[in-house]
Length: 368
Image (cartoon, rainbow, N blue to C red; front, side):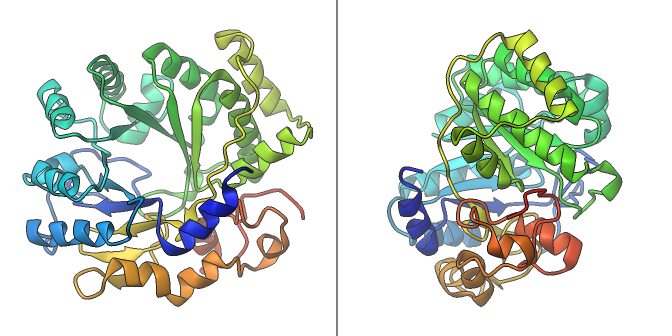
């Protein structure tokens, strides 16, 4: 828990990460797409000048400046992308990109990404088998293109984070995915847990018991030198702290996943990663949509304002909903949980299920 209080205090004033959905345009047709992306840009996307002003607002949060993650759609479809990256660099705002694996992501593009000082890129790999990944992505051959893109980027010295959506078909393949990442030389694994929003349908999702088995498995993954992060499963931190406190966990699915993990990677190389970064929707994280609309995260489509008319710093620090989120004014189990500060549940899932971003997270099985 070292440094957690300092991070919590910091996140009341500034986010760790600002996500900017720079465009809706994307050549893929993913079944789970939060952005409900389309092939061509929508009218009303922030212009180059407006994008630069947004970046200036990010810089106004002060030091340490938030990380700006330029996402989409596919940010590589914006012809002004590297002009925007250069503007951020000039202001001391670190930038990461979340490109789609498409014909836009060439070796030349990766060289340009490195030349322009992009901090890192995130690439989505949503299964350990071609049929699983390609089914979710909606493009045959996407799995092989993704593995090739990750391999090329790592070999070029570009910092790569792999994002994986845990869904009905990818869940049993998590140990094989960990092995694939180890083979590719990837050290940062960001694991997304489904939110029923955009194109994501409920039949893609897993049960609360499977959520728990998955996050407990990820605790084990952290003992192999991976930096594991979760999106919309903040109870992963609770699982880590319970294990650090000596509490054990057992479930048939968990046993199966961990036995295969050891089969592929051998014995753990270290203890459970004790790092806790207590971000959640609207707390340490803020999202700016293609048209400038600000929401707590990309998975929580609750409008807070618009950067075309308001300052992002003011929205983040003063919006009543964000103030309630940051003070932990939650309903149900989340409101009385001792892990409220470092977890707080997925506000996006609470909103998707109950229509209330302050309700309890229905995917968490923990009983305070």
